[in-house]
Structure formats: C-alpha cells, structure tokens
Length: 511
Ligand SMILES: O=C(O)CCC(=O)C(=O)O
Image (cartoon, rainbow, N blue to C red; front, side, top):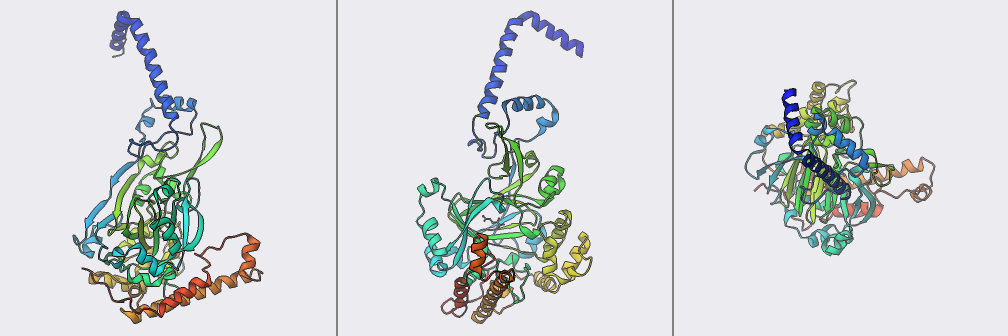
C-alpha cells in the first residue's frame, strides 16, 4: 500500500509540481484566515450557530494552532463542539393518570401541557396579584456571568412586591431590558411567609400531592413553595438543588425554558462526575488564560452560553431542553443540574419534595453523590428512622429507612389509593379543607415565623451584640429576609390569617 501511495504521489508531483505549491499556499492562508476570524468574534455564542456553539476566547493564537495540530488525533476530533440538546418529553393534561405517570420513570424531566390551567393563579392579572400580595416583601437579584453564588444570581435586594411588579413587570419597557435592567424576583422566600392567601390560588398539582417536605416544630414549612417572577431575559444558570430532591414548577405566566442534565448521565461519564460531583459547588468554574490579556481568569460554567473548550465534558452530556408555557407544569428528577431562562414576563411556583415513587432514585443519587448537598439531612428530616445510628449508608438501607417513616407511609397510602386530585398547601400539611383549615395553617405559619425571628435574634444577642441593628452595622452585613424576616412582614402575614373573608376558600377540583 505504501508503495502504491508513493508512486501515485510521485506521478502527480511530476505532472504539476507548481500547481500543488500554489494550492498548498492558498490552503494554509485559508486555514489561518478561518482560525483568525474565529478568534476575533468575542466570547458570546454566535447567532445562527444554534445558539449553543461558541468559540475559544481564552486561548492564544499559538495555542489554537497547537490545538489544530492535536485535532489530527482521533481523540480530539471526536470531541463535541456543541451541546447535545434533545427535546424534553411532553404530555398533555389528561393523557395519563397519576399512577400511570409515575409508572413511566422518575429519572428524566417531563412537561405536562395545560396541567395547571384550571388553577386560579393562571387567570390572575399582574394587577390582581399586586392587589393581593403587593405589600409583601420579596428578594430580588440580577444574573452575573462571573458570580459564583447559586445560579449566578447576585446583587440581592429586598423590596415590596407591588413596587417590583410596577417597575420591572407591569411598566417595564424594551429600553429597560436592552439596558440589562433584568431584575429577578428569584425565590428564597416561600409563599407561606410571603403572602399566605396566595396558596389558595396556587394548588399543588395532583402528580405531587403526596410529596414530603420537612416540617418545623409547628408542623408546617414556611419556605416552600418558592416563586420566580421576572421579565424576559432573566435567568438562573446551571445549579443543583440543595438536598438532591426532585423539583417541580407550575408556570402561571409567560414562558420559561429549562435545560437539564440528568444525574444518570453524570454518573455514566467520568468527566461529568468529576466536574459535577468531585466537590459540592453552587456553580462550576475553571481557570483559563485570557487570550487578549494573557491573565489567568476564572470562567463560570454557563449552560445558556456554553464554552466547550473550557468545559469539554459538557459535550458528553445529553441536555434536555423544554419550554414551559403558562398553564404547563414541569417535573425534574433529583440531583439533575438545571438552568432556566425566562422568555416572557414569567411567574412560576415551585417545590422540592420527595414522594414514595421517587425514593429508589433519590437513594441512588444521594449515595452515588457521596451524600453531598445535605441529602442525608433531608432523609433524616422527613423520616426519623434514617436518624438511627448508621442508617442510610447504602442505597438499599437509605430507601428502606425512608419508607419506614410515618410521613412517608401515609403518603405511600395516598399514592397507592390513586387519588387523582389537586390539593391546597394547607391540606397537604394535614389541615382540613375550607376556611378553618386555611386559618389554622396560616396561624401556625405566623407562629413559625415569630419563633424563627426570636431564635435568630437570640443567636445574635448570644454573640454579644446589643441588638440586630448593632449586629448589622458592626458586621456591614445586609439583612437577608431568607434568614431574618422583618417584623413588619411577619405582622402582615399574621394579619392575613384572620382575614380569609371573601377568599372563597375551597378545595380545588381537578377538572
Ligand atoms: O425559575 C427559575 O428561574 C429557577 C427555578 C429553579 O431552578 C430552582 O428553584 O431550583
């Protein structure tokens, strides 16, 4: 074979040696031009390349050429330059029963179209929302590509929901958006501690009414559901939810696009496991040399602007992508890194919980992750048998101790009974349907908020400060309503408990 090739080449050289020299020179020039033009296109994903391709902004031209030389090798050539994006599975409301739904699997994301269209929140205008909850306090943040905080959300502030809606949603304009004034009312505060009446408009969808959530000593949970409200362009970058429990969201306004990598994919790839599981992180970053300045800089992973030269492992992942429109509902399995981008003026209500059909997957995720993101603490909180010495160290034992808990047994019975019905939050926590159930639950939330405030205040006084004011001024820390809710908000919530008049409190039906 070698002889044949040499012979053919020799013949061509004889016939047109000069012609080949010209072709060779033009070829080299073209390669240099292509490489050069790529290096000058900035660091953003290029429009028209599917929005997911991107360039190597942080390599020197010499490194790029060395990379080109390496690309002759099979390994380098096999690397993906783009994300492998596949559409999420979708169903329409009514296509399957609750039992059938969980019979499929609980390890990949799924969207159910129209599942929450009958919820009162779906028909609510921003003005009505503001009239109900405008006086409540909300936490806002802004996305920064360089922020290492959870999901890249930084510049955290507290404001009244009415002011937020007025400024960033109801009277927001294009100029504001172009100027990057993308302020997001981004979770952290649960609906119970934000505006308890809202639970009557945002029922828990039938697929997840048997999800368990940790309960505080008052038997309630003030921090869930959370809600996310934001103009188009607001986003949360890739993150793993703390505790590794599944996530779901009802979207009532606008539309939100999710990108999700499953834990199964991470486990199956050495590169992805190393990236995501070696160390528990809020975001994942790497140091690279900036081509322009020669300086070493830190690059955060962005699933909405992915750089596979900095994070080549991403090419090994299947990225599930799906848009959730107003009236739709989405479920994400536990331990699945996800990022969310708002395409419209969006409002989503979400919970992280664990239900009987997801226990085996949770146990696998928790044990395989090396018990990161406090997943064992979650198991202990929802199921006391998991607190017994040495319990939960293997998948089988963790699944077993979770099933042994009283709360999980009760939820298992509800699940097996196959009840196909939405519930209100207060019903989930064992309070009866109707006005008295709402009132009883709300008063417990009020008490839980007061207890928490007193506990926090005491912990600060125990450190030797005379007051919270002195603590904040001495430490230059900003109060964070997720840990220290102002008394005025607590009093406002408590006042809502005694005022269910005209709320039309009733159990939601499913049709
Ligand atoms: O809707 C969003 O922007 C983010 C919600 C989310 O991913 C979460 O709470 O974990």
